[in-house]
Amino acid sequence: MPKNIIRMFGAENSQPQRSNHHKVWTKPFILAIIVVIILGIISMFTGVYDIRGQEDGMEMFFITRIPRTAALMLTGAAMAMAGLVMQLITQNRLVEPTTTGTIEWAGLGLIFAYLLFPAPTLVQRMTAAIIFSFIGTMVFFLFLRRVKLRSSLIVPIIGIMLGAVISAISTFVGLAFQMSQNVETWFVGSFASIQVGRYEYLWLIVVITIFIFIYADRLTLAGLGEDVTTSLGVSYNKIVLIGTGLIAVAVGIVAAVIGNLPFLGLIVPNIVSMFRGDDLRSNLPWVCVSGMGALTISDIISRTIIMPFEVPVSLILGTVGAVVFIVILLRRRRLG
Figure (cartoon, rainbow, N blue to C red):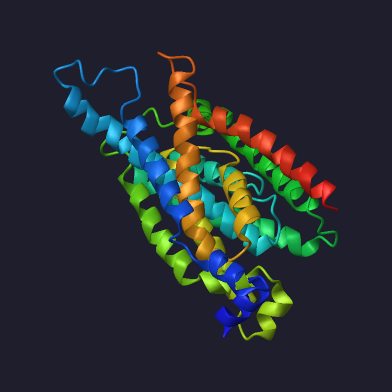
């Protein structure tokens, strides 16, 4: 029942347009996959270390280059999916983990992990980041319920304000307990330290993707609003809770392994939605592939722009994302 209702609300009037919106394996999508594969190959052969001219070149290729490229693909898909789900739940195009404070809560969780455990393992850091991401996202949703003015600008402004407060708390705790280096390292999202043994937990993102596919229709239905969702016999609060949990796990894993990656969840879902509408099930493959490509391009630029040095990929994402954010704001204002 919900699936039919969703398609009734989200589909276009004509049959050819409807089939094009919901069909995934089209020529453009196959072309997009080929482009991402080419970018992955370029990424594996980009770097200061000459893997073809050294005796241990192939060993380093499997130790660093392949894990780094795999981490790029998984992280890009995770952050783009988190942004898409969050935009559906909040019914706002301008929200994502960076503009809702979720990523800052994950950083606070990492700080507490270092407080509780002198040398926390990756699992302990991930667990703390996931728990705090979930708490922070729920706090954000509770704030939204209290706000009467729900314009497209008010929602991200609230999230950015909450994120700034949490970031200040993280910085204060880091300075008070002499952990400022850990805070600074987390804020600089980079793939420079990725190698075998330090990225494998990112494969849990595949499980998150499967769950998002399972709940795709219900999450899309939640995007129509609480009244519509409830009238169709679906628990709105339950769907929001599930969506929040999926976002928290994805963001927590990325925060623990990589760090802060701003605006990726804002750029990719907005671009995909401009061309394909709001159906989560048919958009999710496009969002995953586009997120992979966007992050891989950013990482390649970060490694080559001042070679032999490397710019943090978060700097590239932040610069490009800020420009795209302004463009989206101006476009929404022009459209009324």
